[in-house]
Amino acid sequence: MQVKETKAEGLSREIEIVVPASDLEARLQTRLFEIKDQVKIKGFRPGKIPMTHMRKTYGRSVMAEIVNQIINETPRTVIAERNERSAMRPEIQMTEDEAEAEKVLRGEGDFRFTVSYETLPSFDLKGTDAIKIERPVVEIADEEVEEQVKRIAESARTFQPKDGAAETGDRVTMDFVGKVDGEAFQGGTATDSNLVLGSGQFIPGFEDQLVGLSAGDTKNVELSFPEDYGASHLAGKAAVFEVTVKAVAKPDEMELNDELAKKLGLESIDRLREIVRGQIESQYGQATRQKVKRQLLDALDADYAFELPSKLVEAEFNNIWQQVTRELEQSGKSFEDEDTTEEKAREEYKKLAERRVRLGLVLSEIGEKAGVTVSDEELQRAVIDQVRQYPGQEQQVYDYFRNTPEAVQSLRAPIFEEKVVDHLLATVDVTDKTVSKEELMKEDEDEAAAA
Image (cartoon, rainbow, N blue to C red):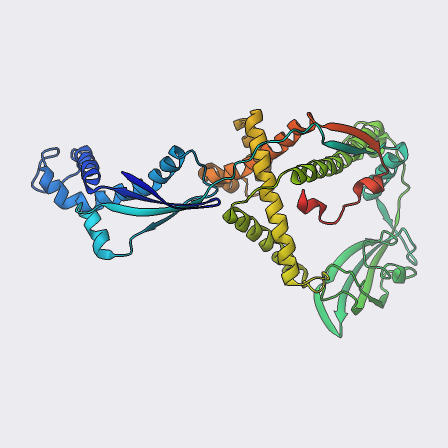
């Protein structure tokens, strides 16, 4: 086999591989001999078929298999022998000359093909001693826990039928039809809908106009959707809701005691408070982790600058862009609504794609040098987490991951990244800073995406 480099520009490589006809012939003879005892040809006993007849009958199809095997295996072997790592799957280009291709399949010509790929860049890892991380932490007050417990109690509160007009805090059962410009809009109609007045579940102005209504009353509730309403086709629009009140109920007295906890399946109110505190700690912990990780990645991004494989950047950009355009489509918004243009947005997301690829390569190199690995058990837990997200379809999702190894491997990357981040946080200077929950939960512009 002959290997010749025909291009070496930056990270781009192109090599020409020639497998001589003599090598193809040797592989063909070996393969035909291997299958001789397995095939059946009329007029011949198994294993007694002459090789000339085997070649005449199966030579072309077996040679096609050999060519495919060479295409699948040889580029990877050659690239490894060159001490290079391909950033993505190499592109293979074969001759478009049918006569030449036919000669290869007949075993009469050399098999010649070109492999194009980009190598992963080489770079030296830098020390992390100078990286300083400020970890924001929130002290959870008892009042915050109690407030959350009260909200849970409100959701479990029972109501009793009431005669007379509805007051704030009462529950109203109603039918309604919402219209804009006289036409009913999707999602604006409901039957036997329950609403606790004053809960803020509906758009501003709706609940206030139901105060004073009794069972059997009807009313046209007139209001306007907020300018920042999620559905852009309704944002800022004037609407009329034709409401019919079917029942009014008053709330039972709410007491934070063991009886309430038992209604929720817990042994005591103290156990409920304990669970609520744990949930708040988890919520704040996730926010803290996000901000700490962002600081770490920002520091690494500032420390490294090297040429990136264009195909990797392009693939990452396409993933980001598909998500962006899908979200815009679902919300009914445009780039202009986001105070930008498509051209500017593409430029910004291209930079984000470059950042992600660069950091991915850096974290991969750090993790490899540190011996970070993802165990089979961790991958299995990740698969189970995915399965749980599709109730009723658990078996189908599990079968998908079982039969699609690349899908399982796609779960490996985020696990590996988090373990590398943990490794780095153990080596850098991290100091705690007490902040308010508002400061902790405030999301910086593009923070989630960049991290």
